[in-house]
Length: 129
Image (cartoon, rainbow, N blue to C red; front, side, top):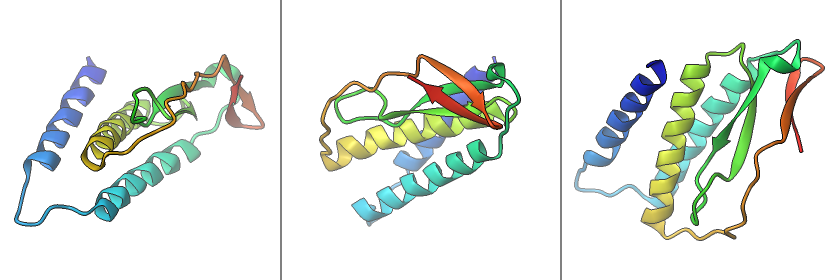
């Protein structure tokens, strides 16, 4: 139920962001700066987590390739606020998808595979392929 509420918040945020218009359209640089800022917030949140065993680690699909699918997978410790991370990542993914469409971004269309597992190595969660 908590994830559902976070998804609803994300949808509402996107409606506000894309529904608010003024006489000037945002530039590609402005849109990219917003994505970069949100990505930095996500990275800071992930960096705050530590692990002590493999079960403390998980991963999420991150980003939106122009052809579809994620551009990467983020590995993180579940010691952080996972619901907040999920919300920020869902917002980022939706914003990047909109950015790709708005600016006609193309990609290599390669499929990025998720990690086969995650491991806690020296207090940090790492992807295992």
